[in-house]
Image 1 (cartoon, rainbow, N blue to C red):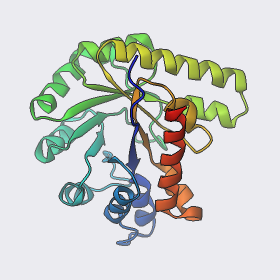
Image 2: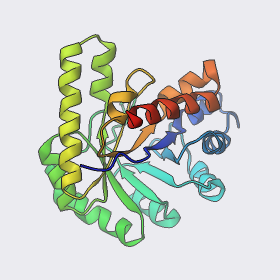
Image 3: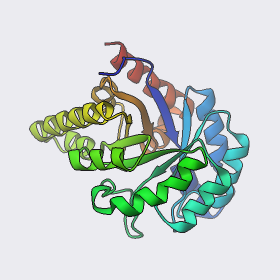
Length: 250
């Protein structure tokens, strides 16, 4: 079992760009949001450059690479175009996520076990370039074991189902999903993978995930950007940081 050390918070600034793009304006600026997140306690910044460029744009990645003091976690699909962009910028971390044009947000995790050969070849140049490669997956044993076999440094466990069940009032199913996440985190850690988690986490749902000793980083975006409407981005991040630290200490 991992040490209960400080849990890192990665803040995803995608949906600042979503609001910007809704009007085709120059504001709100996702880079400004990223700098504010750094000042408010974020340990890293996450940005997903989608194939359809629905929120983050190529120029945002360029500006983030130039402006950030904390590491950039570059989320992307496993395409040749995205690989070339990642190899050009060489961000600290690259997180490979599944992507479909018609989805509202990332749905489910990568099928690493079903695409092991291709993904192994795909991530090799990224690893050689010095990027820490993360795979966004579910908690299933076969996916975690496949991620370890192909040489990923990190797995990020998809917490979306747990969060959905919480808000749907499905208490028993929520608790079962949470236990499966715990088991997945323990397995991944035992295989030498660094364990991250994210998707859908809120003030109400973060503590049980933050308390998992093997998890070293949470990536949270949509909720923090939404909560910023009411609290401001800085206070929303600080409150999330407080809840994470409280859960870790307990």
